[in-house]
Amino acid sequence: MKRNIISKVKKFVLATTFCSVLLVGGSVKAFADDNSGKTVIYSRETAPTIVYGDRYDMELDNDQTTYYKLEITEKTKIKLKGRCEDGHFLLTSAYGYELFNSDGIDKNDYDDETDPETGNRYVVWHTDKTFILPKGTYYVGFTTTFYDYSHIDYAYFRVYKLDMTDFEKASERSETDISLDNVANISDVEKLVTSQKNDRDVKGSTYTLLQAKGSAKGKNAIKISWKKIKQAKNYTIYGNKCGKSNKYKKIATVNKNSFIQKKLKKGTYYKYIVVANTSSHVIAVSKTVHVATKGGKATNYKKVKAPKSVKIRVNKSKKVKAKAIKESSKTRNHRYIAYESSDVRVATVGKNGVIKGVHKGNCYVCAYAQDGKMVKIKVKVTE
Image (cartoon, rainbow, N blue to C red; front, side, top):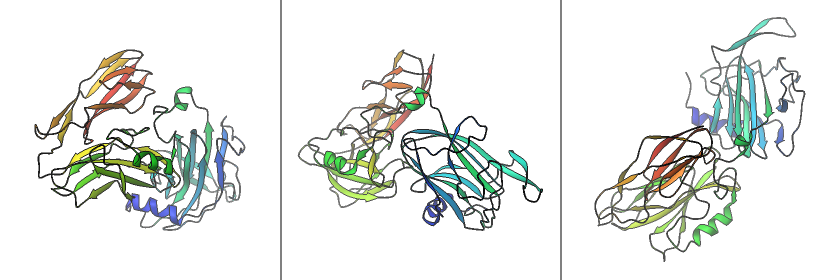
């Protein structure tokens, strides 16, 4: 039986046996291409042999791992090949969040291979996946930590660098957005947020990356929650009472994806910004969240209504209309309904809800209220 996946993935990053470090992108170390037609950019160099298909004696018992650090210096498309008799083959972010899990054994996909030393035939389970990884640190390898008992004595992997199309090279975000493709210094973002002289969104902020929202927790507390980003180490929350004269203050830095601020005034509007950090950079900044405590005239929104889906052609436009439903007529507007595309390579959207098709594909548009409540509109763009 498997154990708790998330806690175990975080555990192996701390307990892993690290071997080789390889820079990808600006500095690429090449091995033989193994007749694949692609350059091998990462390999288990320290194994007894690096010939593709040969056996690697790993001898991993229960709760053991062997993982390798993979540094991506620029957005890169890779093919990840791995084979093992048991256990798990994983790709994770630097902070232990799982990007891929082979689940150890794919019972519908295996090869029979011959042990080059003994001639014995082995059933070998394999993985062959393609990923586009943003700049960052990743870990790839094998682990037995997810089973009550597991043993690996036959396993190996390769990572190949693949060519990318212009579409794949482009960022899903606008070039002015702070994102994995356009990181910012932590100190610069803190200065930007704390010096903000109004209640508007800060430069470089986005909605779809963090999807931050707020809700009243009684008369004297507010809960802020957001979507986790796998490459983020922690999140910094800034806030204050709404109003131009009230500048943002750093409230807390947390590892989870929610925070409750207590000892607030009843019936009062507060504003918040959430910032996602790696160890050295900011990779996302939320839109400003305006939310009120209970016990007074100030109220929030119940929900947002909008069409479930839209289908448009490349270079054509269609307007969608979303409506935020208030808790009461006394809800104060700090901002009107706003819109944002999850992938500007596929479709863009204007402040009035006009969606324009850019490239064949699928994405979604978020229509969101001032407290972060939102609805996703599926967008399909055809030629």
